[in-house]
Each structure stands twice: as structure tokens, then as C-alpha cells.
Amino acid sequence: MAKYICFSHKTPRVFRNRRGLYGHLILKHRDCFSSVPDNFWSDIRTVDFSKFTCRKCGKCGFKGLLDLVRHLNKCQGLKIIYQRKIARPVVFSNGLPKNTATKIMESHRTMRDVALKLEVPKEILDLAEDLSEKYCREAGVGRTIYIDAASLYIASMLKGCEFKISQRRIASEFNISELALRENYKKIMKTLNIEKEI
Image (cartoon, rainbow, N blue to C red):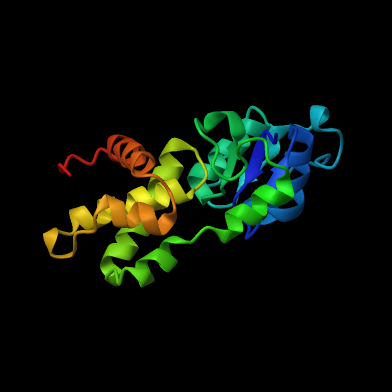
């Protein structure tokens, strides 16, 4: 089972250790930094992470790789997560091989697919996308179909009762259980301090 997953690509990239994650960060996300240490290609144990500088905000002085990754997640929206932070892994679950799990993930419907099927107004879809992205940043997790389903449900409630979508319809379209949807929308509401009763 992978320890680190980068969701910033069409197909998630999986790494079993920090060395692999570090190589990916340097090769695929080099544009996140305005400057890097002179020996950034050397052994990860000798790299001075305090010399990395965030291109967006100019922050430097990072304590290590995970500190750097956490900052990039919050500041630049880089979607790299640590597997153990997910209570119930969605993409790579039940011990499935990576290729099998990836195919299953690709077969899942996106929020836009479901919104189109349910004829959801654009303003509700846009709000749902914002809620999903904001929650993932705040909670430090990767975006999943459970989070998307819950975000779409919350958005439909917040926009008033003229276009209220039932939990059953959303869960059915995303091919998840209503219980999973309820659990996730409660987490999102609590994390984002949404007080409106649903």
C-alpha cells in the first residue's frame, strides 16, 4: 500500500517512501519553487530543505520534506497526501493492486458528470467545486468521490430549496451509499464551519 499519493495529475502518482516523493516533487513540480539548494539532486538525507523557496509566497526555512509538502498543499494547492491521514482510503482501497485501483478510480463519475445528469444549475456546481477544494485544503486530504458527492449535496442545500437534490439521488449517481454521503457532508460542514441546518 502506498504511503504518499499525488492527486495533481490525471492519474494519481503513488510513492512508497519519501525518496520517491522527493524525486517526483523535483521532476514534476519544480515550478513550485523560485529557488532550490545547490545540492538538491543529492541524497535526500543531505538536502537542506530550508533553502527551498515557495514561488507563490516566498516562504523558505522548511524543516523537512513533509513540512515543505504541507506548505505547498496550502499555498499552491498541490494535492499530495499521506495515506495514513485518510480514515477510509477511496482510490487505493482494500489492498487492490495499483493498476486495478486506478482503473476503478477512472470509472468513477466526476462531479460535473453527475451535475449534468441531474441538470444542476451552474451556480450550484461552482459552489460545490469550491466547497470540495476548500475542504481538501483545510483537511489536508485528496479529493474523492465521497467528498464531491457531499459537497454537491451541501451546495444544493445552501442555494435554497428551489433546487434541492436528495441524498438518495446523489448517492445513486456517484455509486456510493447514503451513509457515506451523510458522514462526509457532516465532516465538511464541521471543518468549514457551515452552520446552516440541512
